[in-house]
Structure formats: C-alpha cells, structure tokens
Length: 226
Image 1 (tube, rainbow, N blue to C red):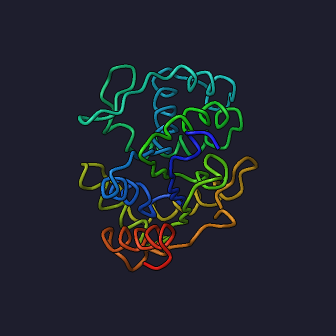
Image 2 (tube, rainbow, N blue to C red):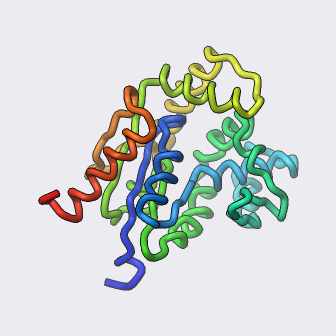
C-alpha cells in the first residue's frame, strides 16, 4: 500500500443543500484535516464558462475551460484567475449551471485527478455527490447526508437572503427537486449512496448535531469500543 492510500479520507455525499459542505468544513476543522469542496470546482467551471460566454451545450468546450482553471483556495476567499469569486460562486445562477454541466463525463474526468490530488496528510474530508462512489472509493468512512427537501430549501433560502440575494422559497423547492432528479439520473457517476455508506438524515438536526453524529461514526470506525 502506497503512502497516499494510507492517508485517511472521510467522504460526505448527498443532494444539494443537505448541509454537507458546512459539515465537511467543521469536521475537517475538528480533526485538523484538509477539506475538499468538490462542488466548488464545478461552480468555478460554471462561472468561468459564463464569463467566457462558452456554449454550455458543448461538452468539449466546457471541459477545456475546466482544464484551464487557475484556482486558489485562500483564507480570504476563493480566487479564480486571481479574482476573488467567493460571493459569485454562491449564486443560484452559477449553481444551476454547475448542476447542468456536471452531467458531462468528459468534464468529470477532467476534474477527477484534481480532486484526488487533494488527499494530503494528516487526512481529508471530501464532500460532493460522488466522493464515496467514484473519487475516493477506498475512503475510511462514507457518509450519505440527506434532508427533507422543504428543510433544505429553507436552509438555502436563509443563506441566500443573508448574502443579499432575492429568492422565493417555492422556486428553491422546485429547483432542488429538479437538481435531485438530474443528479440521481445522470449517466455518469449519478448521485447515490456508496454500498458501504452510512446514511445520516439531518432534517431535524442542526449543524453541530450533524457534525457530532458523523464524528461518533468516525471514532467508532477507528475504535469500535468507543
């Protein structure tokens, strides 16, 4: 077994707005590990496609944009080609485009190695939709985080309103349902729990409670007596 494969990985997959990104960030902070927000890579690709007016139906063109991304994840924000785009990649428009282009096999293949390169000691918490099924199939712990669509929409609504975006709750519910169907039914790496994943329902849990549940599973995994 090589050195890289000895580095522990926890994957957190699930549908949009299930809280996986926040949970992954807090979990990584608690463990002192690195965090990978795989969705950010697709959002950054989507944003760059928008800026360059790339035909979103052209899989080759979209994949070429992804291959040429210059990205920096810094404490002060996410930078794309040296521009801080932390706010921009959180918009619903960018999210919708990211969901649309994420079905492209060529794009996913382009970003696959970039995601695997994020596996660094002392460990990695990776969140997305295919982290446990495709990107890190050998992960030490795989979590599939779900929540009721109404609760997910309410969470997204609060996030966007706090960022100054004007949105309707009914539109968010419809959008999340559409994304779920698109993600679960895409041909390449569809959204689904890995065979050995543990499903955690966060509908009635706050973020801290959800992190505590995942931590409990992790400590039990490394020491069943815990």
